[in-house]
Length: 272
Length: 283
Ligand SMILES: Nc1ncnc2c1ncn2[C@@H]1O[C@H](COP(=O)(O)OP(=O)(O)O)[C@@H](O)[C@H]1O
Ligand SMILES: [Mg+2]
Image (cartoon, rainbow over all chains, first blue to last red; front, side):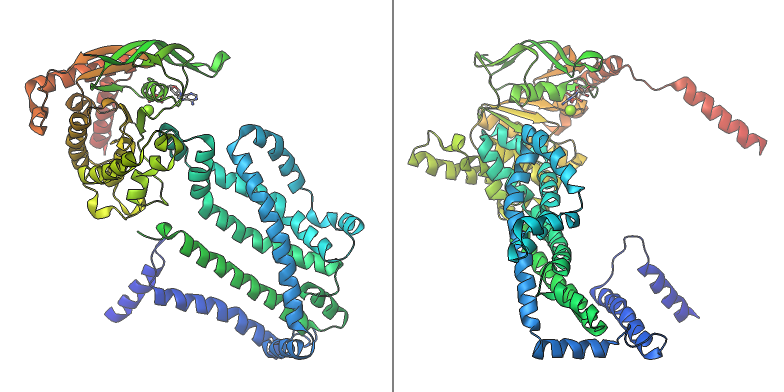
């Protein structure tokens, strides 16, 4: 009886609002969260409720990924898609960071650019695709342009917001120490906003992958998104699954890379 | 006593039209060299605004503020400021924070190489003075609130400012830490011969630290009255229980209450107590 109570009490203690979890328990729950959908998927595929053609099992998907790799240039698809994402994303970041920095720092720049950016941001990036294809054609630059359109305007606004979140007392303290405007930007605002900026890049990187797929679905003859589309034509649902999961895995890896960079570059945020 | 800061007919209005707020009205005040002046008053009476105007972070709507007889023009290295919190740079270590002004052109300008060496010794001296030696390589968020404020004060003092402006610098600290900080800042004031303008809402703190206590009144923000503190030059914690100290504390508190236009409604409290008692009886 009492040991049962003990177990109940421990179980209950897991559900404390904003409570703590030991690393082991955390991993246990995380594993559980991953395995349940996988098991459900597997169960569904072997149950026979759904036609194998529409719902391939995990094993079929893995073996399809393998043949894709061996005979079908999977590594080229991964490489070309990653290249497009990186190019579009880098172009966005290189322009959005300085522009956002200016918007968040100087009111006239904000007045000039923020309402405009806000407006453009609500135009669906996907609807620009026909225009991009007319203007840029269908070579690599069109894919990069679509990723750019999809991420740039959001990124500008998020960077501006990151910059505005720099506490005013940090800026005023520098002013009372005699800092010039340029010094305030380079020695206070930029280093203070850096961690938030890296997080913004991490989040927009996710969107860049979304727009990559959009771009490749309509205007490409290589890449992961393109392969997914072509697989549909040949009813290769296992390849569609493999493509989607691969993009997810690449995204997850890049996300973890960003988090690692964050911990490495801003150790002061992780020391307590 | 030579005059360090001279404030003449200072007015400050925020906003315009119906929404205009008069934060400072006709403030006239002279603060002496190496004087320690404290400002108290109900919230919204313009204490911070006045301090920020002296610091050059705000400009007056009319009137003038002179330092050594010269009109101030924006912030300057002669006037350092310590804020209540969040002013340290979390990405820099304690030592780097303290040396921050040395990275600025204004802080390097007329420095010869021997000055630079002296300045490096200065940082060490301040770290020792503030008792920060054991945390010199720590980051601000690893420190307690009291330690953080020590860093902020050391950073402000590094370029040897003639004036130190402090806006409720100990407002977020617990009572014991605050006492330690009081004696520390008095020590600094003697050692560095800095003129200190200190804003607080704690009357005891104002008397204990100040040579004069300026009481400000709200709506419109103005100087209401000035109290000369009659404590000996050398202060110690026991003085807070001296009859003279308590008397002055009472006088100032009463004055602030009168100017604030806020008071406890004893009649209402009495009525509420009676009602509660009646309800208890009925049950
Ligand atoms: N930047 C500002 N814009 C508009 N009103 C302000 C600003 N700063 C202060 N005020 C107003 O001026 C008055 C004085 O404020 P403040 O100097 O902060 O008072 P205190 O520090 O004594 O509490 C208050 O009514 C406050 O609302
Ligand atoms: Mg204030």
